Image 1 (cartoon, rainbow, N blue to C red):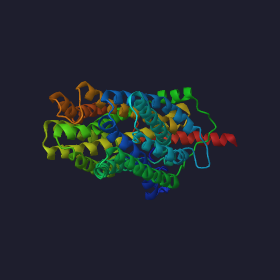
Image 2: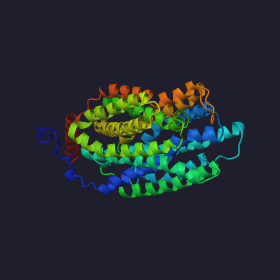
Image 3: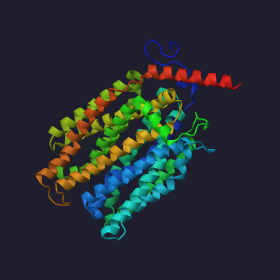
Image 4: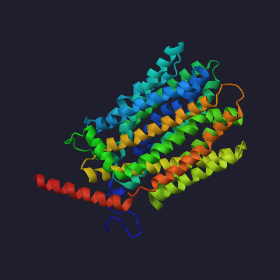
Length: 466
């Protein structure tokens, strides 16, 4: 171990970044992949609930239930997609082909979701259910392989953090673009339905271009021989024996719940609780910029103080900002400052958590003998989807409970519920996330010890094969 970790805790092993020639361009391309996915996902997360209730005239309770059912069905597919990914072998690799071949159908589904055909009653609900279900399934076909690729792209801890940082920078650029540009495009149209159709076409085309660039430039360096066919029961064994993954999944679930909860509630909060819908655009821009700044700083913090302490710092900022935000009332400067700090804190926390999840691939191989980036990645996507689903559906159910009616002055209960969903509820979730991450024990020293053991096993196996 002494040749791997120096006295100051820094890495100097054969896993050094110097031996992996990974360019900035490849990391940029990987970030573009997430940008492509999330320009579509964020269009849905930020605007679909508002679009369906206020423009397409479906009740909030029905929309909340519809989203919950679709996501539940999608969740059944997620673990199987992880197995499919791990068992796939093509001349383009195991993971990259899904990104390119599913890109066009994904963009088409975005257009169909915001198509708003002249249907009524149950027919309207069935149409939204079908196209939204298709969007989520095809999104899963792209996201599971994409998020599972990092352990296949690099074994270096610092490179992994940088790839994940690039990924979430792509996510936040997409959020920034969607949240700031969409209202401006809508304002150019007299008919909002036509506006949303036009926007879905533009974002769909941009997403396809981003996916093509990502496919072209990212590389799968550590391909696994498909000598072992991983079955569903093996995936259960892998997840059950990868103890650090439990903490990672708990944090991802909570993080996505509070992220989507606040995101889906934002339009309602600024329109009704603050009284100025146009402020949402300013809020989204500031929030997105600070998230990106945080993600640039995140890898340096990880290198300096490791992942766990970085998480405590970032999520602590998120919690504190949420509490101050609640007591700020409608005082805009404090709202914008707290929103900015919350965004930076949460994005750094999520980035660190996914870096921890990537390290679980080697831990799982060490414990079970299976190297399954797809299954580990699908477990993280599985809980992220549950959290995101509950976050979005919770907004719909709360609005239904407080008897929300669009485009009228809200009751005190309705207005306060929007404030709570923006401030204290996310802060409470952050406290739970901090508690969950304390159980994560896979630090740098243990990770590199595991990597050495795995290398020794492979060398022994190769010698025995001669």
